[in-house]
Image (tube, rainbow, N blue to C red; front, side, top):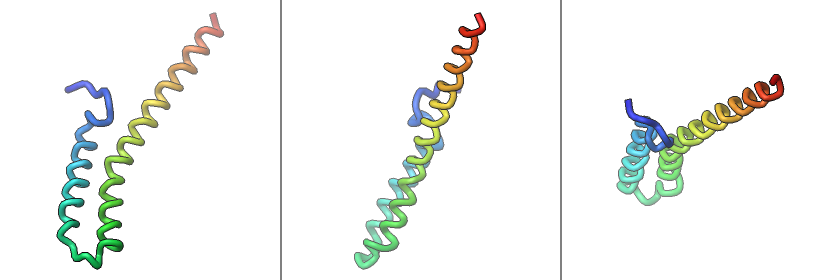
Length: 79
């Protein structure tokens, strides 16, 4: 198993980026009258996949960091 140092190392984020790129490419083929309707909705939803994964990764990291610092403070105060 490889080390995960960043959300960009997650395979699910990479797949999400692939989906977003494909959606952007495919929506270029849509009729121009759909530009501000369906095209924008598809692009926004496709872009939200990797964005939400990155946000979730950041929250997980922050929660672990805060939790471990709280534990360290408790240990110091008990000494």
